Each structure stands twice: as structure tokens, then as C-alpha cells.
Length: 267
Image: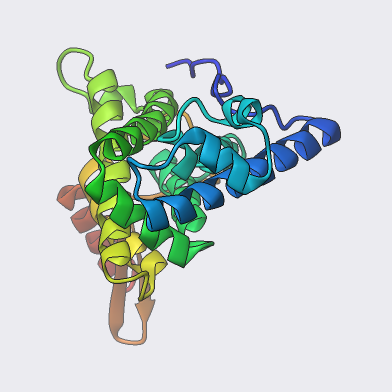
């Protein structure tokens, strides 16, 4: 299967040159300052009572500056998602040739976790606010959908066509697998935020991703060039003990043939 053309998210900043990277950094800094002002006002005045004019004034900028960065005050508490989406895509673009694409996607979504973990207190306050204000919850759901679309497009280019039986299930499997990765991430992240951002969230994520890989790993990977021949099973003798190592998706018959061959060779 040919891999679809890679496209940068249309709503993300261009960071391909030093000048554009500086502009993107300045843009993100301003967005964060506006977001900090908004969060402080939401905490003291309440979300509904806070106006865009007040947020802009608290950040020391004009109203028009606010609207250059956010379309509404709902967006003001999510200042980092554009930048994080670009970083997640960069992880996909730079993936090693031998890496399983599902592992690549799991690494990509960790950029979101790192965004929250960089400012735990703000992340917890923002989480509590989104639980209380339905419009903010809707904005958060829209942000999640952007990551799912990015990962779905990526996975769609990395299927083993021979693994499918009837029909063309590639789009369905790509969408379900991408959704599973994002859902696993969000489940762990929400649990971490509810606990006050305490605990090793990355270790918890790795455990959740292991479950996703076990469930959806088969059939994804045709778009990668293996680092070398990858046998389903290998066997080696250590003294009087025969040690066999097999992939979790290795057919039992192949594992048994490997063991039988090793036993014959060491008689």
C-alpha cells in the first residue's frame, strides 16, 4: 500500500525555518500569557462572569491581540494544543524505519502528556474547570479529535495487507487503533489529574499502551522496513536448558518447529 502524502495540520504554526520557529515561540508565549490571565480570572470571578476584554487587559494587551490568538475565551485555556499537535506530527515524521507504527503513535501522543506535566498545577486547575463548564468540555473534545485524525492518517499508511481476510478494513482498523491510543492516554491522564498530578504518569501510560499494542498490533507495519530478518521464534541452548524466545504473535506451529529443530541439532 502506498503511504498517503504527509501534510502539516492546517491549523498549526509553520516551524520549518529559524525565523518561523522564533515567531512560533513568540506566538506560544503570548498565548500562554493570555491563558494564564484567563485562568486567574476564571478562578476569581468565575468563567461566565469573565469577559474577553478583562482577559486582554489582565495580560496587558488589546482586545484585537486576544482575537489574533484565540477565537473565543473558551479557547484561551488550551494555549498549547497547536504547538503540541505539530510536535506530535514531528515524532511521526522522524520515526525510525524499524519501529512499529503503533509504537510511533504511542510516542506521539506522549507529547500531550508532557504538555500537561510541564505545568501540573495549571493542568489540574484546567481539568477541574473543564469538568464544570460544558462549553470548555466541548472544546477539549474537539482538540482530542485533531489528534485522532492525525494518528488515523498515519496508521492508514502502515498496514500489512496480507493480514486482512475479507474486504478493506484498513480505514476502520486505523481509526479504531488511533482512537484506542488516544483513549488510553486520556484515561491515564484524567486519572493522574484527579489525583492532583501525583504519581508516575509516564509509567502508567506505558502500561496502558502495552494493552493497546497487544490488541491492535497485528496487521500494522507494512509501511516500515525491518531492521533485519525478524524470525517469529529463536532457540538457544544454555547448558542442559533450551531457551526459546518467540514473538507474541508467532504461530504456535512455527514456535514448535523452532524448538524441534534446536533439539535435533543438539542431540
